[in-house]
Length: 106
Image 1 (cartoon, rainbow, N blue to C red):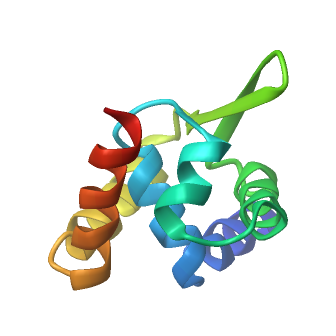
Image 2: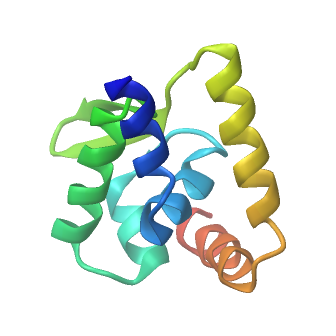
């Protein structure tokens, strides 16, 4: 039950949803997430730690950089996350995040 509550709580925050939307495209460094969301590193790290605790993302260290990617989820949770992220694609802020990501990563 605790895992289910954490999963839903992780999806109940706008910043975490934005992070998940950015991470869904593949592994990404915290510095890029910070640039796209235009916020400070401690806030990004706090939300990423919550997503890790909820079992939604994994992290990989590369020197002083940390890269995040979506974790493989059970079928039901995967479907729910996919549907949630698909629904967000029409949101103006999410579109703006995608445009910023292209500029930051390319």
